[in-house]
Length: 407
Image 1 (spheres, rainbow, N blue to C red):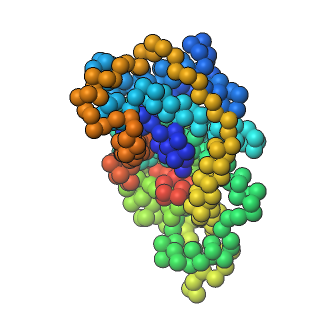
Image 2: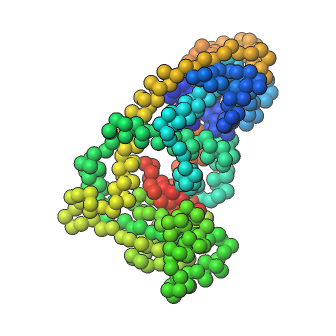
Image 3: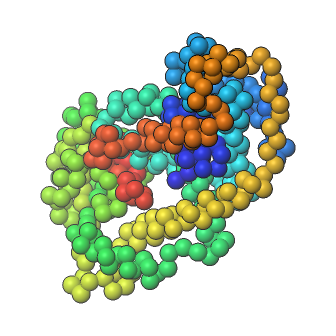
């Protein structure tokens, strides 16, 4: 996905490894970019990028990186191959890419629904062992949850929808033959996959969970109705608790283990996780036909469509980047001269004399910092550090195998 960490492919390189990691948190959103009260840093297709947004971006980065002291800031810039001018230009480029995505979405009539944002946020949270671990990752990345939503999730969704629009316009995408071949290769993984629904209670609501479970088991209360009424997972509650097939979703270990022990229509006992207490119902089981998968109609439609979406997204990424590169090249970005007396524009001559081999003319230093930054960026998405099993159950699998979290 086109996250803020890889926008650098189009010139929106962050100002360092640490800056990329905190990019989302530092980014001014909405009308903040176009605030020209302190002058206009640049124009993109006639729309202003305010000097105020650039200055605030750099100030927030300096604070988060413990570079508020001018000596530390000067040494850092020289060590990483920057000047105040190149810092400013790269932040301008970052905002230009942000605005271009919005422009492209507007041209194609693309809108982001709140339900889509909620699903993506759930996926991100599902990668962590607990809410505290999630908040810790956000803090390390210099983001609040609201900033993560605005700068990472929204950007991801915009790219995805633009990519889908391009696919539709070009008539490309995965053919049924390619999709069938993939499902045939994955038959062993699909065999025995289970679809489930759940009702999530907060940990302190165990008494309520026990009462609801008893009423479900007695037949007094319908499971789907109970999910709509009681579940703390509002996303799946609206669907009667449905969280999809485990072959296309990533569930926490406790949830997955409990689901594996259920047959179709069976309901679990109370299952605890870091996200609360679950009541789980296995709503369906898919078994590959004895002769193997010979046609798409033999596979549940939800699995087919999820795999199709993931295959199309994977194959479309390259074409998206190619399209976006051309789209950006065609944009009219005018960067105005740098004003005097900007707070981050300090004299670097003393630091350059002390470090003669690293200057702003050395593109390797800049690119190296940015490449390292892309590896560090978006640590709030870093499930590898927390474990892919962590978090609440998820549905609606993505290309990475994770899905919509229930939490």
